[in-house]
Length: 396
Image 1 (cartoon, rainbow, N blue to C red):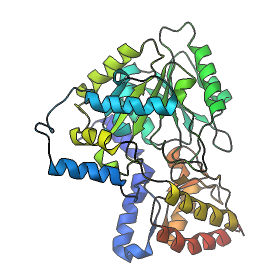
Image 2 (image 1 turned 135 degrees about the vertical axis):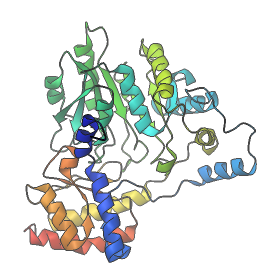
Image 3 (image 1 turned 60 degrees about the vertical axis):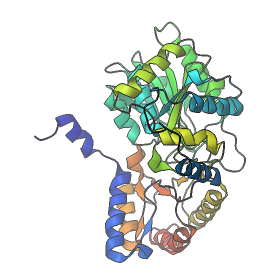
Image 4 (image 1 turned 45 degrees about the vertical axis):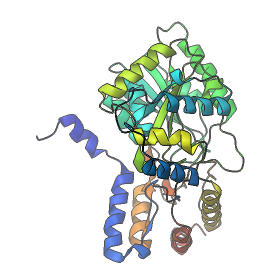
């Protein structure tokens, strides 16, 4: 065998998102892009905000000597301080640069975090539906993912989480706003989760960490506030990406923040800085780090995403689909009209050229995910197909 048995096994269960995305490319080449409605990949089309472009133009016109050289593995001090100041404003928690490490997006940040805390066989509890790469990240560092169900509206089921906790539980990994559901976990849920983990961590040598993947933290609708995990639990870690907030997913820039209230934070931060280097990332991209303070708190607006959400949600609901209205991110997760979500998704693709992702790719059969971070025109032209498939399966 050319590759390891373990990698061969993991590749066999690889991302449905990527499989469907690659299928979409093939179909566009065969039928023409205008005839394919691709809702497979969370690849935002919104352009970066003006502040980001102005900062990029400034550096291209007036480069700083040495601006592309190595820096501390944790990132530029001024960038970390900028992030700390922004976090302090958002959360009311007194962050400093010493609580921040700049990373290669949220993916790099999660791998650094998990490597820092996991021993072989340690368990990480993940509410389902979940972002499929979590399983691979946990496996990368010898961990075991333990999935737990959420409620019907995709909110946290604290009873299910409590039942899943064992002596090997090292962390609970949540994602809010959530991919694939668009759910935002409210303050009461986080408060309850913090109390649960505090109780279950008592008398342990190390606590059960609460890791919050907040890659979509700026994309929230209808004035809903995103509660901070730092207010509800001391051993809390936030992993953030600028991919969606700035519309630059290809640039791979993000950070990890450790709660200043956590007594073991200094040692944990030291491990993360060490691992940022030894996992091969070395440091987050120099240019992107320098751009962040200049771009300021600018981020991509949510009005267009909300318009798309409202159009799609209104149409699907009218056609008879059962769907929870997303509170954030740019995904919708309706029920499939038949139990076999893969069969439904394939019919949607073959009969109507609408490409989505089966819910089983996110640990939840009987659903399908729609990534509506596409042109409004794509959504509008896809609606007759959604209406026809609803009629076909007797939804209306």
